[in-house]
Length: 467
Image 1: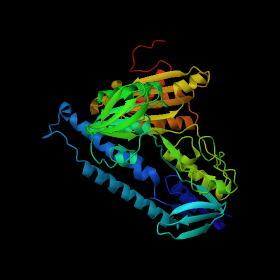
Image 2: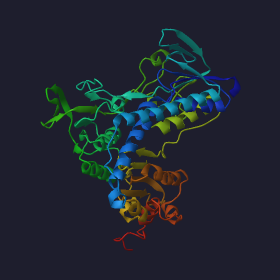
Image 3: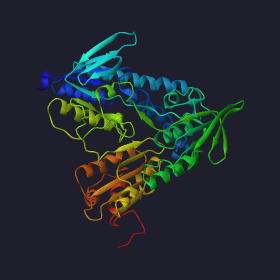
């Protein structure tokens, strides 16, 4: 059955190209349509390039601690933005070529152009040179991703007022940078540009930065950003932006006016559902403009599936990839469903964040009083040995079953370490089982063991809880 099917995929980001390869692995004939670069936003203008730049700032922070560690350097570190961007571009280019090689390996046809659904089995592709191609398929996967949301009162020119795409090319290092939005993107860029030397101000509508994160995480990150000379203005909104002779003036709802040399708009993302023929085919959209799908990623139109940012929910590259595998399997005759209760995520602020499961607030909103264990990096021998003791692990457990309901980490390698808790949740392991698993010493992972022990008041290296 699978060898007879032709699958067309609209979009080649982390959802689309993964879906293409999985479908080909399962025996399908596959065509991928992409109007930009392979790898989508994540690889070209998001996850990878931002981490490549943040790695330089992180290294600089380590070098600044060199004297305390007994390492004498001849000069303090200095940034070369042009070389940083060139390195970032080389990394991206190499990974894009790697995807092209994978597509070729699996005999996947890559069509460059903008695709539009004509019906449930036909996509018309318009190329940059004006030519059009019609692709017939037995099944379609929509993986068109998302774009940066705009603010009408803040027109983007790509120079003085930027989105993340322009900010990743570091056109200049503004003396004063104002970031509109204190979510994941805003906080990551605050870490980057503050490290490069900008005086950064974040304006966030909610009462705290990273409002979707656990309160302990948000509080620690706000403290660390403040320590890096980032001013955090919360519970406020931008009402007006003006260019003046001395720079840019930004007015806030509170009545305060702020002067800056550059503005970064980081207010979230919108689904790329316009102009791809959804209305012609009759695909149902939700209230937020997302494509409505079931647990198998099927839309209401038979044979048409959708994955990634266009379906809303957790707009993460690895979720899109997982959805791509599920959609591909279903289209070639298998049965697969998505599971969303265990989705680890990393936020690459300085220090970085790792999380999985529910926050304490979400658990309490369900009428459950979670059992909580916490452990700070300051109690780890490894953290002291490497000279980086800022960090926290917080584990939330079900009071009846002892199963892990959520884990929230801040500190070195947090985005990697959180996968131990994610695996525990995936396998329905208990906090006690996490605590009794032997952890290597000295490692950062010991913080997870200690936090798990602390749920029962048994953490060896914590003082305060007595039975």
